[in-house]
Amino acid sequence: MVENTQVQVGEHGHQEHPVSLYLKIWVLLFILSGFSYMVDFMHLEGWLRWSLILLFMSLKAGLIISVFMHMMWERMALICAILIPPLALTLFIGIMAIESNYTFFSRLMFFTGS
Amino acid sequence: MQSNDLIQNKKTLEPPQGISGFVADWSGDKEAFHVPWGKAMMWIFLLSDTFVFSCFLIGYMVVRMSAVEPWPNTSEVFALEIGGQHIPMVLIAIMTFILITSSGTMAMAVNYGYRKDKIKAAILMLITALLGLSFVGMQAFEWSKLISEGVRPWENPFGAVQFGSVFFMVTGFHGLHVSIGVIYLFTVAIKILKGHYEKSGNYEIVEITGLYWHFVDLVWVFIFALFYLW
Image 1 (cartoon, rainbow over the protein chains, first blue to last red):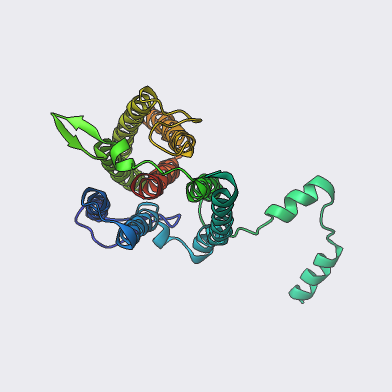
Image 2 (image 1 turned 60 degrees about the horizontal axis):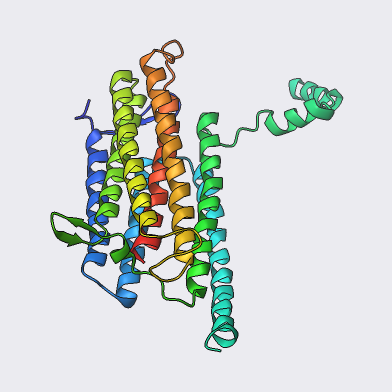
């Protein structure tokens, strides 16, 4: 059973994958988590730290969604229905970042050091 | 001739009104997703949960960006003394590895669910649940450590007060999800072992439970990166 590398599609579009695939992804997630922990352990600072954290985070999230949650084997209709709506969050993050900058500025200007 | 009949038939067939019309319009042969309905509904639930957690994380971004007092150094706050050695963030790292391992065992349980190998699927689900339980245990330890050091939702001895509220909100809500997932996993695994799905031979529930569990792991990936490491 483990040896069969061909993906078999069952009666309801179920796929069977070799267990080795999950083990490989699992090892990869372990390594990526190790890397993100090392970012903290090595005391990396500034843009390097933030970009590495975000890079490892995105890679891990992508692996979990596409392989463990089987998203890469789903039909396009389901993929779009689930993955496109969260893109609206980027706008939300953007406007809230502008708002928090403004709050920070007003706090510094009017509420501290009096 | 026959197609003419059909057109004729269509004209005379009035669509149902009222509640049955509502049901007919929303359901009648308009299947969009070619997956079992339970799986589609779990995906839609997870999408809504994505927005809930996003609101928490965006709220965290807002209070952190606008905090005037310095944000505590999480690397030091979550450090532990083990065998006389000071290791930063060690418990969080162990929790991360445990959750990833549980995701791996869950993925294999789903795989055996596809093959209708019910004993292996149930055992792997029980292992997943136990790993989840140990995660919740470590979180309880972390909470009691921070509480004993004086961190509260409204105060924080290490710097910005907002740190306390964000910590308890975000990790608390995630821990609640893990706890519910553990109960869910135990329930489904026991039902499988009791032969509840024997008659139908339908083990889709394993995959649906797996989706929920992987989502819990997915949320932790974001919390680990944005709250603990940032």
